[in-house]
Image (cartoon, rainbow, N blue to C red; front, side, top):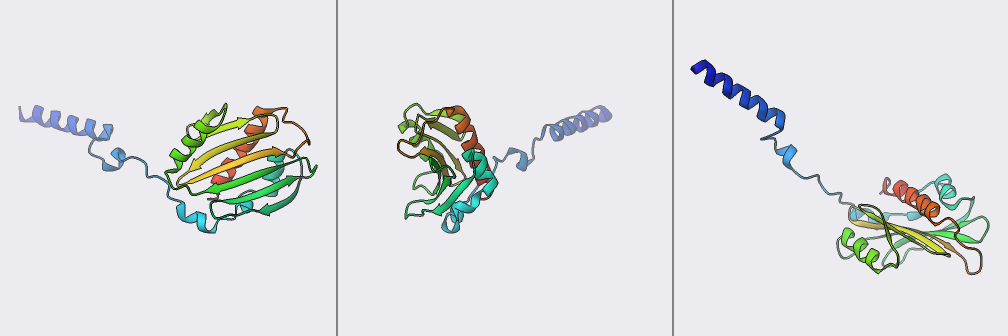
Length: 172
């Protein structure tokens, strides 16, 4: 009987190890990214390469200009045609970043979810994609200058902006 009880205990212990029971690391939730401090020194214009900007614009870029304010860090990137630009911003909101994105999504007319952390919007003259990464909110907007043209492929424009945001989040 001692041998049978011993085998049962060994088998039960092996099953617990295989199931991950008792392993504190397996039970702990993933650690949230904390990047609020990056906001203080981020240069939004440097979060993507010229090639990445060109891919998002669909043409060569003309100029990049930092447009930081008290409430956000930003960069405007003009297309070489002079008809449109991309405006990129990084914000450290006073509420949780996920809550800010949810609030912005609720306020945007016809907003569509892109993934669990991202939403998009587009109409004839502008498109934007907004997401959060850790403590920060990032937005990429594609905007036509007045009477300079229309967005004819909204989903394609959104996809290019979404790819650009993905590249930017890797550097924050």
